[in-house]
Amino acid sequence: MTRYTPEMRERALRMLAEALPDHPNLWSAVRHVAGLLGMSPETLRVWHRRLEVDAGVKPGVPSDAAEEIKRLKRENAELRKANEILKAASVFFAKELDRP
Image 1: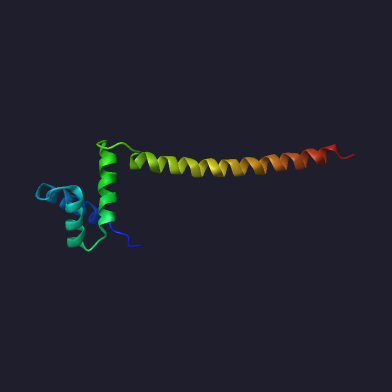
Image 2: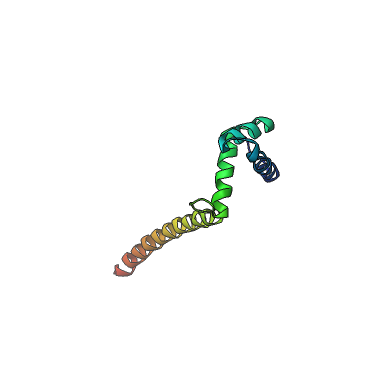
């Protein structure tokens, strides 16, 4: 999997925006620009879709909200794990206190 820099992404999206008027549809422009840049048309199409969602043009979860959801899910999982450990410890110590 090739990772592109944010600058490359911005450049590709800028080129796509400039090429759109010269093509009959989005997919044609995506294929053209992706070919010029030597990247997969699907990568460029996904970037364009993400740009539209983030701009509120298309429905979907914006990038910043998706990142926040991912962070909160990770935090929730850690808290659940800690809670289970604390429950197990409280059971253990409760048994110790019941011993004569």
